[in-house]
Image (cartoon, rainbow, N blue to C red; front, side, top):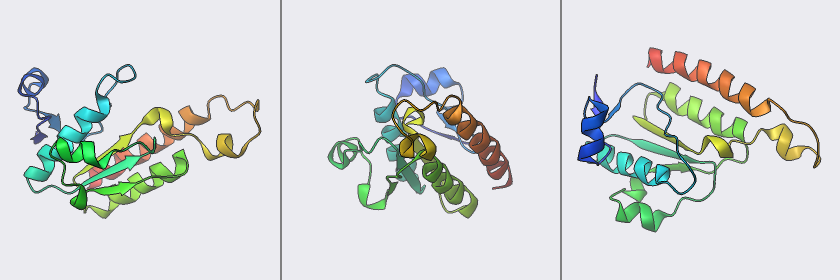
Amino acid sequence: IEAISTGSFGLDLALGIGGLPMGRIVEIFGPESSGKTTLTLSVIAEAQKNGKTCAFIDAEHALDPIYASKLGVDVKELLVSQPDNGEQALEICDALVRSGAVDVVIVDSVAALTPKAEIEGDMGDSHMGLQARLMSQALRKLTSQIKNA
């Protein structure tokens, strides 16, 4: 399995393949401010060093290009999108995967993928399960697209 280094020798070693696997969906999970975005930016920097094209879907609208640059990311070469809602973010992700022109796609973060109905709805409206359905559908579609890429 081809892998992209995380930029951390210890983590790459612990993962057993020298980094994160290419052609797979990987979720990085942890508490707020635990370094998830920093880790993804480090992965992007490593991928770019190896000539890979990377995209960052910034659902949180919080990407700091100066910080990314300090981590080694070539911000001028990074494809960045700041979608308005979860559906838009996942459509962009799907289009990037289908294009075959991008090697690494980061979505930051799953928690920020708010469904359009929730954004447009009234406060107090029940939107139970909307995000779960959105993610479930998107992951099935993306898994299929990645297999065919």
